[in-house]
Image (cartoon, rainbow over all chains, first blue to last red; front, side, top):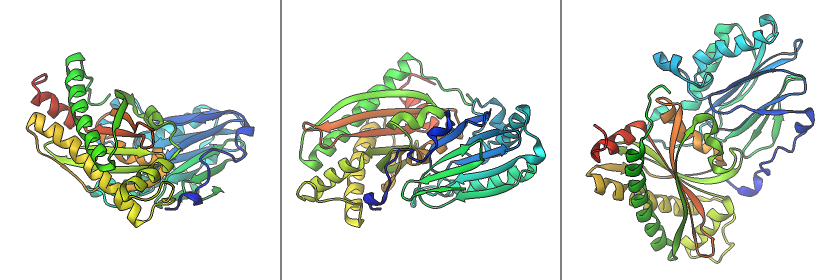
Length: 180
Length: 205
């Protein structure tokens, strides 16, 4: 935990040049058909960013998952991407609505860190891990392959999806940026 | 919202006066600890949609030091004290009696000093609320975390988001006269905590 190791928390990688950056907040799903667009989620702890895209159609989407599953309460939620299990079909549906072809959709995921170490409840402590497992299972049910991931660990992340190239860029609080 | 809890004016007043009492107590605890006058510069009680919540600390990617604890007992919730790293280091110097500028990283000693600060502030806050309402509230040991603001807030939000699409936050900015110890004190109650305090104060049955 040495501060000097951390990079400045500004997005200095060459993403802004690509055009519009659209922020995807907690529990949100955003899908766009625009090669110039960049989707981004900032400061993910136990949350997971699911990036799914069809390169041919130039359609990309991001979902900011907070929890694995909502059980029966889900239908009333105004945050469609909050739960991995119920959000995933909506994400894929939105991609298809904008011209993506299901057989071409692939996914990259990042997040699910364990930022705390001594939580009073185990449920909270393992939330990142549970989110990652739920996201993997939900993508499996949709038949969408995961081609890259950066999950787990002990630090927060920011995640960008460049729709043009399908590149997922991940910055961790204490390391450098990796492109997946 | 899945589990609708929107506070009406009277309920907001009760929640607000409790928080103020708690924060006053917490800040006098802090003042004693750093041996300086602490001034509360702002206090706000908010109900924010989940998607906007990480912006509360001025950007979810910002690197901060969070002192985090939970409380349980008759009601549950999360307490966080968030500082810019440089400020947390300055506070650490005050706490450890170092010359200003000595602390430059978070080692075991620095973490434990900040955790102690969390203990004092957390328990003073909870004591004030528990005493007012005759509740038993127990704080957890604090954890000191250096990470992105959003990642730290995720921890506290996960629980309430299982029940609600909104997050209730009490946010205070405070500082010493020379602003050296400025920071943000956040209380993120569970829905159950809000219900319990409203019932105990007699504004809701």
